[in-house]
Image (cartoon, rainbow, N blue to C red; front, side):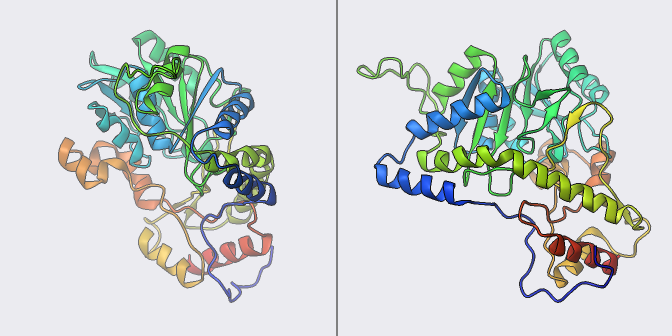
Length: 382
């Protein structure tokens, strides 16, 4: 790594950037030329390929992970008035999907190092109205699922994994998305580890969950008798298109390379920043798992620094370095704070992280020289 200061950048360095190759482009063109643009053979192929990759029995490709969470909650029996326990350290889509089911989000605090849910905090919040638990694999690091699954089984609760960050991640030798007793939802947004432009997918081993989610994603229509269509229940317009799936087919084939490069860059950050005062590096869990490194999100030690998180991000921007904010904790968002009366003190660990987190540029294609610019700018600003 260079030891000099930040070089003058001709263009700002983005926080994230998708890596789209020639195979993806050719498949999209072939899709356009085929005349079949909506959900069709490529969507079916992508679903089968993804299920095989993670080791799932069933997969339902959808228009977004948010749509996937909504369908997964409904397919697992979440109904109006039910309570669903999740984390405050997540994108608001997690809570929004719960609310759109007519259910009530109940928050449990996190481990500030891994940013993941703590099982003992979940256990404290289970009531007779609790229907499901939604753990979020923050930044691609799997939640410690075994104790959470034991708790859910003992309490008769569904587990829906928000795996938006965790495509390719593994827990105790099993890929996220393959575990029995859960439904998992992945995101293919352009800043994720692989992309379909926009899109997501649900995986499950439960055939009834699969059939319900599959039906709900396209208006609730029963596709078993196409000559005489029937609609057993009203659904949504959440299907993925063949254009999106064309990207996904080839992004999935490149995923292992993407993950290896993300891990290399993350370890390079850790090595270069481990001696930097004012920065608290992400913790890595000590149970067997594979981190997908969707994000590299250290915390600013603002108790020792004369600047806050927003000022820090602005200073890096002056050096041509973009950053992300993952996340402003959900209980601090005005809608949820007003509706449920949540305060920063209710979830102190999540509030601590929310005030301090900053996500550094991390994506395949980030060169060592570009990463050195980030590191030099961090040292200059801090």
